[in-house]
Amino acid sequence: MPDLKSHSTKQTIFESKKGCSKNFLLILFSIITISGIVIHLIYPEFDSMPWAPIKVTCWMMSFFIFIIAFVSFGTLNEQPGSYVFNHEKGWVAIHSITNPSVLGYVLYAEILKIDIHIESRKSKNSTTYYYHGYFEKRDGSKWHFVNSLNKEEVVKIIENLLPCIKPDIPSSTPPLDEVSKKIEKLGNKDKAVLHWQNKAIFRTIQLIIYSFFYLGFIGFCLLALFVFPETPAGAKIVVGIFLLLFGSLLGYALVTAFRRNLKNLFRKFALSINSTQLEYYEFNKLTSKQKKNISFPLHTIGTIRYTYVSWENSKKPIEVIAKDNNEKKVEIYIDALSPVECLQIENWLQQTIREKTGITDWNV
Image 1 (cartoon, helix red, strand yellow):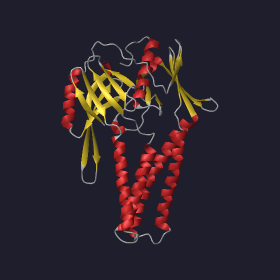
Image 2 (cartoon, rainbow, N blue to C red):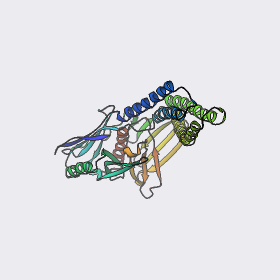
Image 3 (spheres, rainbow, N blue to C red):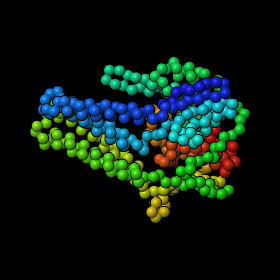
């Protein structure tokens, strides 16, 4: 989660704490698992109350947290490492958290507004509010750069930042044609081409293992409910709740992950831009046979955008949207890339279209 590190008239820096969410999940999982082991050893009589439902709850929660941590790998975004608002040069440099040398740029001239998004998280007896400071670009995309439990803190940060965001600051242009080394960039003066593959073999192995865990979970619940007569009533209630609630959630996550991964496993992708067309391709990895092709005349493209916001922390596509119809669009998922690398692709597409069409203020 990004926090304000420093602020001056020259630059404002926000930095994220590396890996805090993963550490929290690991600590929570460890506490519940150790609690289950201790209770099991100290109170071995499974049919004694109230320890039977408590034991089963600890086992179920440990299993559920493990599965969520397992299946979320590859579906959640890597948060950016830092946001550097350079008030002298007139741009925001967004750095990767795993490799700070990888960065994407947002020009101040592209920023439409800076605002606060309020996220509420409800528990049984209370509601907690998180306040996210974000900037919205003229193309409609959003990037959050700070969050806090204190609204006044975020308001003060934005009030200090706003006078420094001057769209007309004369500056040199940052390198907007950089793309990740995970992407193969080809082409000539007439056509620019990007090729990529979303690695999926390791993810497939993960999902197969996850499927065995999921089937084991369902089987255990059914056995406890209908086969083992010695299962206490309290334990059956706990098992039934987990079966209805978490069984459906885990099943949905499994189906969604498999559908997404199958495309990555069997297809490779490409984008090409010439003086008149932007085209998106999908090919069979084994035969190289074209499976999908979507073509956009450049003069019909209204927006190319990519959004990263922490309150919707699932991987989002780069969107190519028609000028006269927001419903007509291409969603390009590049699962191998981080949000910063997707911002690089967005900038590359916009910059390349400017070069091909000669329209210097396109999409700004």
